[in-house]
Length: 249
Ligand code: AMP
Image (cartoon, rainbow, N blue to C red; front, side, top):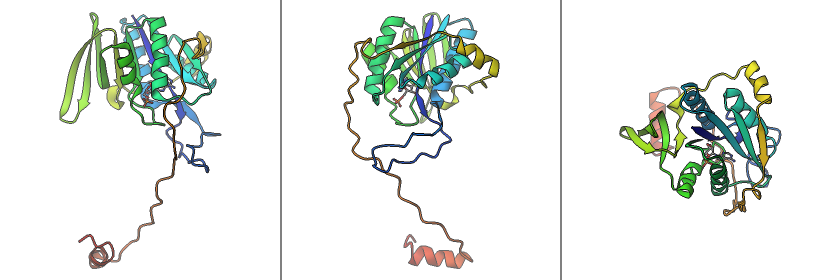
């Protein structure tokens, strides 16, 4: 059984992002880029499924600029067997990514696709759902536990009222939540080994997918600046300020 894991190159979660002065988006020049954290969890889960003898191959795929090869190498250092980069300089929106992934699924014929629940840059939370719709496959989003056996997969999801357990027939789409696993630490020998793993580069044209953006970003702006807090001398002063300045009591 083959597992496909899409991974996105995003601004590292530790970086304090800045909006470009022309308000067209977030400035990603000269900032640290990393694998989307939810995708790291997806790769870890796929590798564990392989280590348990259920999957035979883990293929990782990224859509984006040439530097996304680094993200694929990280996925291969965690344990993915090979990588595919769909290379383009065009800014990709979730529907375009979902169509590219469908093209790769048609070629690779995986039984399971594990994506992150959302990319921390666009916070879209759409790609997995769109891919499931395009393929007409069952989907389980926000997985906190995955058990694959006998042509089906059982997925536990964290929902408002508690835990929901779903059974899906394979092939299926799963998206990961934070508590699914803790990705392993990538060791230097594994980083070296990953450099030798196969990495294929294809283009959207080769997959026959039109990636023209459908949405136009009108403006990206910084959140309003919060004014600094003050320390009041005593409770009476606090009550006075809440009553007469903030007018909330
Ligand atoms: P999103 O719908 O943008 O929040 O992304 C959800 C998930 O889709 C991510 O966690 C990735 O697994 C996958 N994904 C999104 N964009 C890309 C991309 N450019 N390349 C590969 N995978 C992607």
